[in-house]
Amino acid sequence: MPSCPECGAVLELGKDVIAHEIIDCPTCGVELEVLSLDPIKVELAPEEEEDWGE
Amino acid sequence: MMKLKVGLIFSRLRFEEKLLIQEAARRNDVELVLLNTNRLVLDFDALPQVDVILDREISQSRALHVLNMLERNGVRTINSFDAARIGGDKVLTSKQLWTAGVPTPRVKVAFSREAALRAIEELGYPVVLKPVDGSWGRLMALIENRIAAEAILEHKAHLSSYYHGVFYLQEYLQKPDRDIRAFVIGEETVCAAYRCADHWLTNAARGGKTFACPVTPELDELCVRACRAVGGDAIAVDLMETKDGLTVHEVNCAMEFKASLAAVETDLPALLIDYCVRAAYRHRKEGS
Image 1 (cartoon, rainbow over the protein chains, first blue to last red):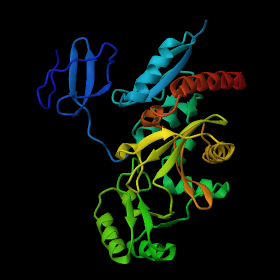
Image 2 (cartoon, each protein chain N blue to C red; image 1 turned 90 degrees about the horizontal axis):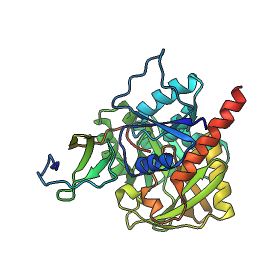
Image 3 (tube, one colour; image 1 turned 135 degrees about the horizontal axis):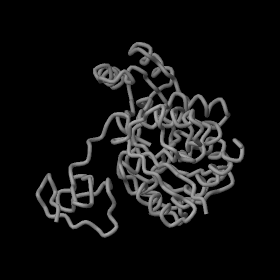
Image 4 (cartoon, helix red, strand yellow; image 1 turned 135 degrees about the vertical axis):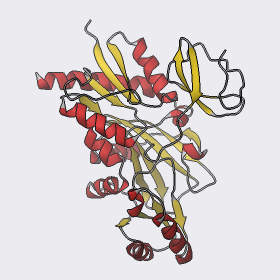
């Protein structure tokens, strides 16, 4: 099981999670990016940048 | 059946992108090509081979480069480079809306603190100061008097991006504690949602709550005109309800719909993929 790199909580990923999906840590709320599924790798999602938007 | 290659450009795979990926996977006429700009290398001699691009890139600068390069290579892009450029720049958007006769708040643009202060006083207090390329209500200011204006303009001068040297000033319009986000795909406003908040900013990113909003003929007509004004294919139009009627204050090309989807029954991901497929076939036919 992967753990949150921020708070260390064990992460239970849903069955339909896909690579590069952004998820929230259910314990500390930090945004995480699922880098890969096999093996499962999770890291902090990139911080918001100035030209981000819709 | 020959599958159509739909390229999806992104760097953050959010709720919306996940729904689009799932929708594409359900269809037997689409092969989805994921183009993650964190890993993408654009080589002029070997650009991605796709029939159509759906722009879901969160970074405006990355989106513009990819759209421009692929569009010049003959790929149909949704939205187009020009639409994304206009939609990502509030000055260009306001000018396009104004020129097309779409009701939109009065705007003045200035390039120095002194000129900005003069423009603010001409518009009259309160006035709204927005970053030219901002989103999600980020760094927006409601300026209520000259003292606040002088302080905010001084702070802006110390921000690093050269974009903060462009002062986009918009008249403040009285409105209820809600605005409308409407979604236009092609020539139709497919759904809309109210965004409600106690704060003057109602952006969903800032916690605004959403409720279904009926698409009246007036709303539909105005939103389609706004979409045409910026040359868009699929955009979100933000409107205010003022005493003089509906007023368009923003358009969004890489539209977010997570919050709105909770309030409407429209299957936006399905409509978007469907539109991409139809646009690609039409593009192919016109090119042959």
